[in-house]
Length: 287
Image (tube, rainbow, N blue to C red):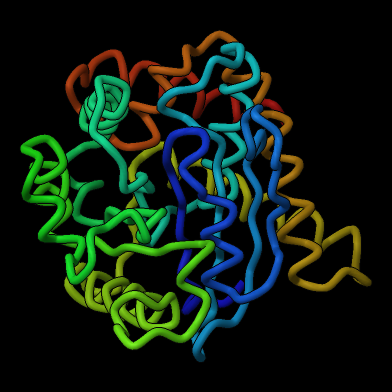
């Protein structure tokens, strides 16, 4: 994968429309949509596509912040996400619905704020779906300021927020703002500006760096034994090998601890570093 590829991790509660959002942004069905009342995205999935002359690695995740799935299932998907986005994402998209703000929505935002470090917020943008729920002539920032918790979350993300509607905004409308074509351009521009503000760097931490180092080591081993494989095939195989070992290493780590490590939360530095060092050593000798 090219160094210029933007790695984007999409986060949000179940039913927020994350998979539909990806299909809307890319203009094709890359991620299947589940029309049943059950959880839609059940596992971390990634696609790399060219969009408006940009190479995008889009990583869709299950609902990390409100899931009722088992710890074992969620742990596996968090580890998969860590492996897919190593050495780190250039952008987090926090996906929420335009809807009445209830205790459940407050709980999701509280969990996001709990797990994210201040550094991670520098790479985050809040993205709302179901934009047709906005009152006529109302823009998303005008809607956000009506709720203190939402307003605070957007402020943590540098004031970055956008809105899409996966159903109604596909058609050309008089109001350019209420079209996904316009919103895609705005989102891509925001991500570009964010990358520039972060001096081209991706969000990373010790855990993500250790995983990337192990992936690169695996790539070197595969290159030496499989001369006929292309670089994308080598990279995919290396990530698969590292993922299997990480799942063994992380078997006893709680979902909350894993999310804290992934997002670099420093609230409990000693415990986090202890988990990380244990994982680092185990990964090193699991080959």
